[in-house]
Image 1 (cartoon, one colour):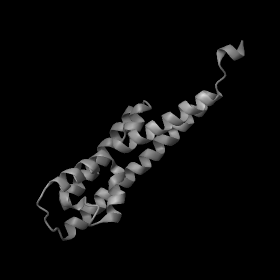
Image 2 (cartoon, helix red, strand yellow):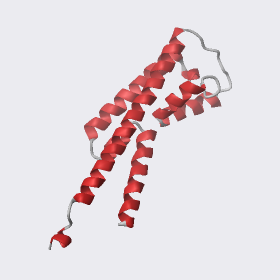
Image 3 (spheres, one colour):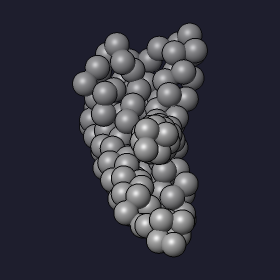
Image 4 (cartoon, helix red, strand yellow):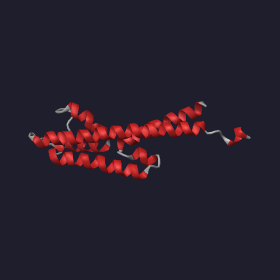
Amino acid sequence: MAQNKYTTEKELYFVGVLAWLIPGAGHWLLGLRRRAVIMFVTICTTFIIGLALGSIELIDPAQSRWWFFAQVLCGLPTIAVAFIQNASLTVNEIYGRGVDLGQLYTGIAGLLNLLCICDALFRTHLLTRAQEAKPSRKQAD
């Protein structure tokens, strides 16, 4: 029983981390391919629209810490953009309505991914509980 619990916890962590890194990947791993593709396209499109509105400079943990907490929930897209933004030597000050909308869109993309992560973890939990509830054939004989 302890081995089964360890495997279940390991699966939960793996699905959670994978769902955070790549939007929709947790559902893909669970076999929910259509749902995973819809989540990936929706979250990445929202994130890219936010970048198009506000520029790459709005992913900045030093300037806008609270927005970055929401944006980093989007996973690898945010980490890649933050790495590219920090690697560039030129820092342009950005102002205006586009920046506000860009931060809003990228933050919403991260929060949408948080909902997807919670859904993937809950579905993983339900699947493991259903597998534990099934009696094995050896026990039935």
